[in-house]
Length: 145
Image 1 (spheres, rainbow, N blue to C red):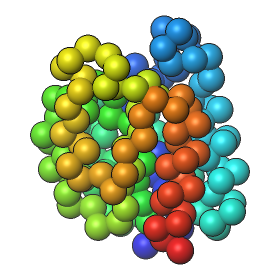
Image 2 (cartoon, one colour):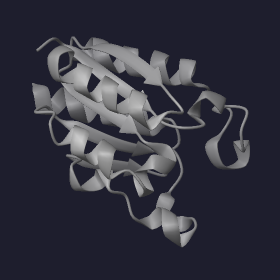
Image 3 (cartoon, rainbow, N blue to C red):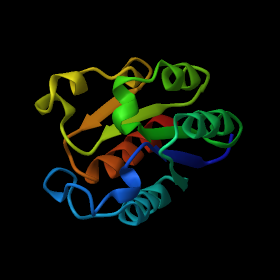
Image 4 (cartoon, rainbow, N blue to C red):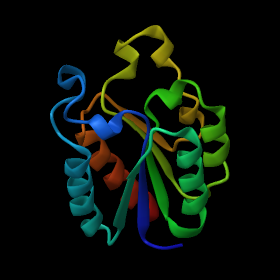
């Protein structure tokens, strides 16, 4: 395994900073990448941030991470609540997995309260805005140290 952390982002996160800023804030995925890279330097970890609106693409990246990543941070977005396939893919990954949600999914609609991904995650961070990604990087770094 390498010292690379895959940061996978699901549907609509390409619009981060533009879509519903009252919920998700005004920061972008570029901001997420930058803050995670800074934390990664503390642990000698590189960041590989990816985003897709397509479930199959996220699964392919999880499979790729099996060979190329020391850990995964994933914000599956709406797929959290619907995708057994993403859960199954994550179950094939042997390193740490952290689940991140920018908003607090437990304060939102009832259907968002359950995440399939959480049953595989070594930690779940929700409601901390994009700072949740940096917290996840710090925790992955600690788990790998």
